[in-house]
Length: 329
Ligand code: ACO
Image (tube, rainbow, N blue to C red; front, side, top):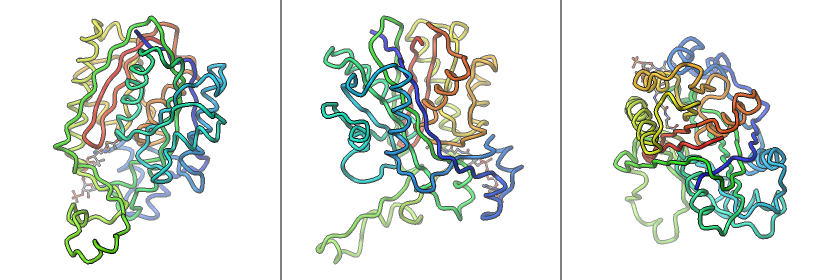
């Protein structure tokens, strides 16, 4: 059983932060950021919440699919920057859209989140119990960025993407993976309230994870770079093999957008022609799990997706997590 994306939506905040804007607050430059990452600007949320951004993207996806929220049996949200501990963002989005029946839940697989969500959705669709699933990826990464740390603050942005998926007879193949031994390579410590008993403990384990401040992403940039540049081509090759497809038969690769140099390094192995590799990092930076659905929205809007095109989406991120899916448009 395959899946069909019947609708795509997006939302990005209006506020744009350019490389020159960042150079006013940290010791960096437009040249350095452009050359080392490919990023020129990013959208930053200045008040909106992640669920509100996700709901806007979801409404657009439903409209694009010609469906209403009543057609949706499940809302699946991927995010690493939820608005609250509970309920899930999926429930907040469901409330905003007006469903009283949809199953709603969040998942956190960092930048691989949309890939994981699509494979989970496909498995739920296969049971026959669900007809249409709304997948929303919404991220306010600026929430977990230390804007005095030039090694991370230049890389990320905020935004949301959404898709409606349903069953189809098209091809479908997935290859997901993880390597939790790299769990500390990209980390944002969550601040917890201490209870009356733990207050007395001097050795609070989370304090020892690293020296970085609570609530901010810390990252072994070079290690992540190597992991991503090696994993991306491997997982793409593996999923294509599983689908019995050659690289020549693939119409488009839509990878997670972390750094243009990661995509270039991966493509030195894959050797895909330029027009088959989606690159959208320049305007948005890294928006974690929202990069891929936002990319699909751009491609559809620009008329670059044709019926039955064979598309590979591939992600990698904190965890470490990774995965790729091949499906037909
Ligand atoms: N501006 C200017 N100089 C900088 C900046 C900056 N913004 N950031 C670092 N530098 C400096 C460093 O301090 C270093 O200076 P030094 O030589 O005096 O020590 C020099 O530039 C080179 O630093 P490197 O870390 O070697 O630079 P590199 O070319 O490796 O680029 C980068 C760093 C962009 C972080 C790269 O390693 C990278 O992209 N890694 C992957 C990060 C990533 O994608 N993370 C997320 C993926 S997973 C997910 O999406 C959640």
